[in-house]
Length: 249
Image 1: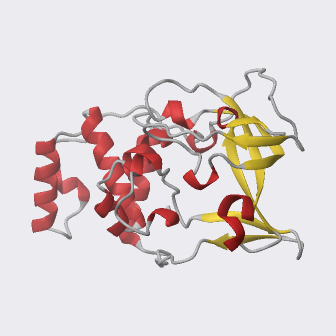
Image 2: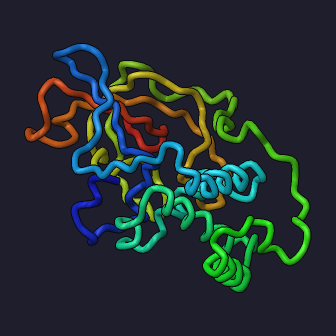
């Protein structure tokens, strides 16, 4: 999301939420080993050991583990924040905003319940969480501890591309959630590796099912992405789904 922080005239639905510190894998062809290079102009937040952040972490994990939401819907919910709010919010404020939006849309909570609960803790910020409840906790389905890894699908589909194949990314402008960055559209790269068949986020975020398809690591020359201003002898690897790619020449 770093490239969208230059101003408020951004359309967040076309800017995929990156999650965490927006690192790209940048490899120096001149100097050898791969490096983790952050995009410039970032504000770092020290969150280690901050207990105030745990509610957002626990709530997201619980909601996904219960099957109320999936991670792609969650990312898209964050992308639907008002642009000025998104750019001003901290990392975990984005978490809470996205989760709250989905809970309201799915009927997990109502506006009235949310308002009452917020007012309760504004008046009693040190109160235990259970004291806000008028009755016992509702029943819940068994938690799925493997939710974070359940994205690979053994469909038997043969990937269209192989390592070493030249490709060009589609110059696409989908409405809603996508995982192809704007700066990488209409660019030439080379397939580095094949990750297998994965759930397709662009469909999964919008209730269209999983639509699994092959996922590739694609290597791009830095100057292909950012022109002559980019550092020489650098490349960037992006994980891209098959429908984002066309054969190169």
